[in-house]
Image 1 (cartoon, rainbow, N blue to C red):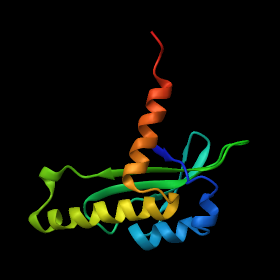
Image 2 (cartoon, rainbow, N blue to C red):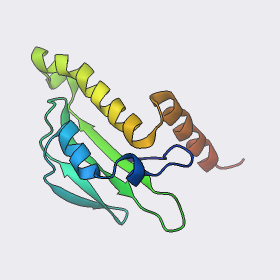
Image 3 (cartoon, helix red, strand yellow):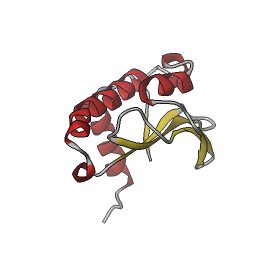
Length: 126
């Protein structure tokens, strides 16, 4: 599960007031919720795109801190995909990146750089 920060000065509920509807529109019907670290996240057990096996996404709320977007995209092994399903792989990547951009206001490069900084901050000093 990855957690993504919003752009400075922005909040998830401002960018996507109805997160459940956004998830359903982009990935398929929400089949329920799942608890992760005290957060209730939406689950899509049968995503529209055949590349995705399962999607879990929702707001990660922290007291005293700005909310983050918690997301886990469970993808099928590319070797198991048929040629038609492989064509959907490019669309799956585009959908995933566009969803994260619309939700966080950060592009892929910005999200990667942010995750790198978090890992560096967690590294022990020797």
